[in-house]
Image (cartoon, rainbow, N blue to C red; front, side, top):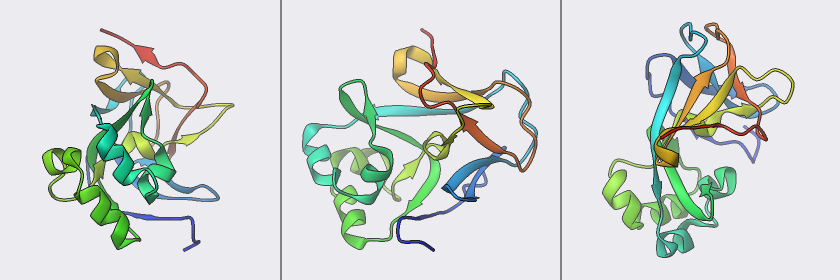
Length: 161
């Protein structure tokens, strides 16, 4: 394992799994057929207090994902348990009010966090139902089992009410 890689436990959640993506670290992959137009991820995105952010801003999960929604810091919780490499980072997250309330068994993130960029032919796009109180992904075309799920990072997602 390279120094900048991290380990994730697969959640066994239906149609997706996190596993190594050649040259990219980890990625999100289909385990079953995902049909065009199908929403295959929907996770709550919960705003983090400034006090909580100060505790975790220099930890591995924050450096990897940023957790930024507009001008606030938000955590897209989900079924994939983050496996910390640094016990101090784990303790910092455990000390936050957001994790005391929403992740008593450890920091569990949305599969959304593990989707890699593909500027030429992404197979999924973001979906933000309820104006961003949750985050999701919708297939742009059929995604076959074993295929990596990708999105175009500078593409505006689908905002719905």
